[in-house]
Length: 178
Length: 247
Image (cartoon, rainbow over all chains, first blue to last red; front, side):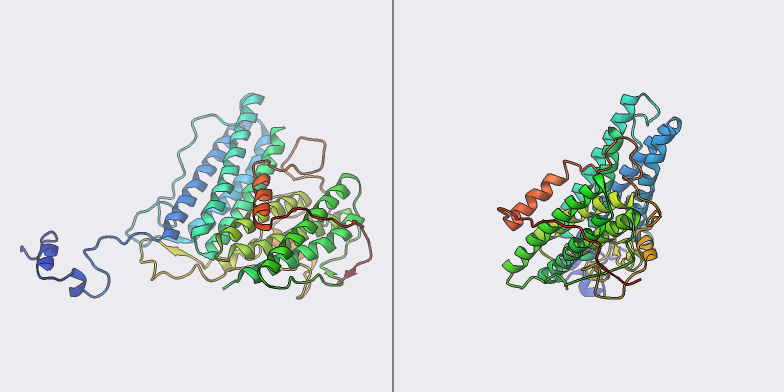
């Protein structure tokens, strides 16, 4: 029974000058979960950021129900962000039994909804919300470009394309502010 | 594996085509739209000079512009002229997308920032934004590149495949019909009626797009750092309606 203990086995192996991987074929069962690849970590972070951006848009669109024109302005942009998120999630495969943020097997939850209101308020409030969205889009584009350096080429191209889309959203939102 | 030189050559070929194409588009535009076309032509002319300089510094001979280009569809009015401009910008975006796939980190950033400029211009001419500039028509193939969480990095597959990049949007290769422009963009309105501005923008009398200050200066700065441009001489710009068309 003692030998079967997961806590004592490594100790006995160490005394014998062995590692558990010497006894088992394949990955070391006692080495713990392998450290995630950099692309995985980066992709999860980008997915989380995209979820937060979508959360901002959803709050703004919901609040814009009384200002139809603004809602109509924002919904196409929100739809494109949902496309971004779907594409990012499709590139992250989370094996069954593992948790993880984002990805097809992840929680899939949106980011925490913003606490402030949407676009249903006064004109200054509308402008403030749009300015917030524009700043978020600009930050997203810049953040994606910063992440290009460390990921594989195909993923870098996806990030660059999404960043370019975000940049066009910045222009649209800048027009809405005026 | 995409080399820096081949990626830069692809972007340069796209810029050459854009320079030619804008001379055709501009001939069918007037007022502020023609001014916008001229501004974009100037930008592409500067960009191709910069790219040629980068390629030369890498010890290669920059690809030359073609004597003439086959346009993807007949340009006969303002609407088709704007559609051509959007098409050209899509090609340029694809050209710079190829640069993003090289190993050099500075070149990746350079390509990505250049994509933002061309995507913005494409949105202006098209009247709508795109979800995946440069990738719009190729997303399905790229979709197979995946990252597996929780596995040994050495065991996972994907990622290095399906790297894409475009060059000259006006050739070589089979011409694309006007519908292909719309299909690649995933939007409508092309070739139907001219649009004066990005569709979602409501306010503002000027049809010229507005650039985001926080995005553009880094691009200029990056170009300055990479290319060490001291001065760029821009040649006389002339619009002309004499062009080849394959329809």
